[in-house]
Length: 260
Image (cartoon, rainbow, N blue to C red; front, side, top):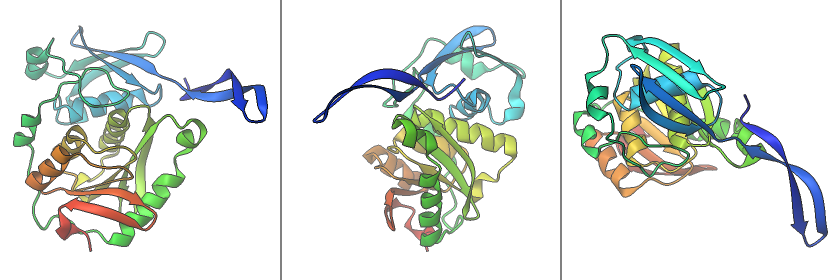
């Protein structure tokens, strides 16, 4: 399956009317069945689905590591992912049916509660420092990798930077999905999260911040803006939150002590 496909269009401009083709991004529904029960449907890009499912379960708090997954089978034609957890999931049983629509784009119902942040680890005040130039270099490399966006203009990007270079990069129609893919891939690679920087193309909302916080990631940098709630949570959890990272500048909203 592909991120996009060619579509016949008619283009109108001051020069007239032209029959041509355009590259349009795919939107793919993936329904997760947990322990045999329909759980949630993610609207996503049809690539790297195993990383997406693993990252979703991690970032939503249903598992603590990829080792908690006993079985994961994905049927791409049917758009179904069947998941069995080792020892089952008491949390999942409690949340069946309690679905909430969040501010996420390209995403179906998710399980989300701001109070979840209360149980998230507050990072150490002296936790990992990063140079200003490192963030600038990472964002430059991040922008250069946005191949699907350059072709379609219809996806978000997310990456994990470590020691000044990008280790994991994914794109998706949803910024939450892109981050989940990065987290799922990074867990399977065994990356040390507390030494990493999250790079994102889209808005940093409270949901995005909590996803990073749950993995102990100390720094988030985005090309776009944060929300007020994300900034408040970043202060509470001692996470460095940077926005509008473009060219040779960015704004830091919290965790100022980490940027050298």
